[in-house]
Image (cartoon, rainbow, N blue to C red; front, side, top):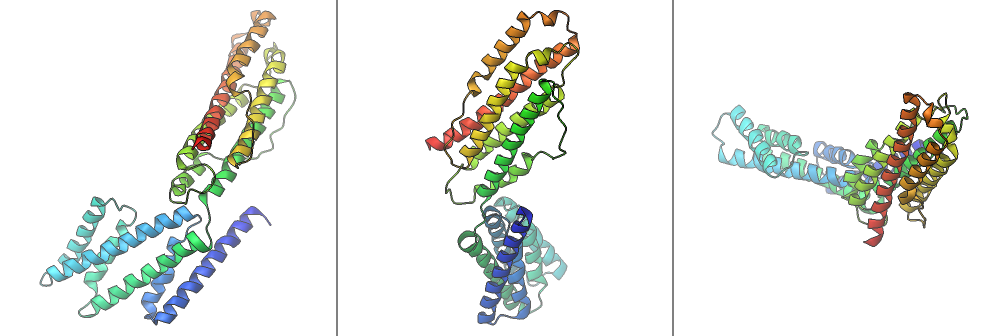
Length: 343
């Protein structure tokens, strides 16, 4: 079973269970059919791909519903004599201001809609209709939270662990491919798109709403992604300057640079294990700059640089700088994981 199909089936199962539970609760309460439908709508909107998404959406939707209904009720009680369109406008505006004051930006539009809806409901039906609507929404949100937190949690931490591991594997593969090109070997691109670090950042915010559990916390994960960003930039720069020039300066440095590249690739493998809470030993990251300086000194001693053109020399220094950048990024990842271990 492919990962995509597995994720789809898990989501479908969670939604199915949620709708069944919500429908059962609504059936027991014998709620009117229209408000009962809002329970299912609230559950589907709130239940996200991860526990953090679900909690965030639940808090915003619950707060927006309550603020909107209360605002509409206050306006309706205080100004029953006012022209209906004016009452609706005041209720919506008041709800918007309250949401801004309490910084409820995500639930603001829902609250404004409910505030206006409350005023629009005619006569004696307003309290019953809006009350059922609010109760139905809260039931759907509660069921979604029970599923997300207790029955069927889906952790952003797990998705981050997999995503970070994929990025580290991509960095290691890119380093080894560039090392082969530096050594004069032909390396064909496999056409695989490297995983994106930026796509993982929204999961860090969701991680803040999850139980701590095992693995890095949100602060450590942010530092890990910062380090990965730096390392990815270094790998891309190395790819751009790893083709050997006519004087073969990079080929002459291939034994030294190859050793550094292998150390960095092995560090990526070790960091992947560390992210998954497996024992790992990371070596060579704080020695990379010294090794690169020694490689440049050995190249200078061969006197090959005397006849090299400026473009080839630029590529040599760019390759050295790119490897140093990769080492710096991986060192940040290692430091962030060390912070987690010391907590």
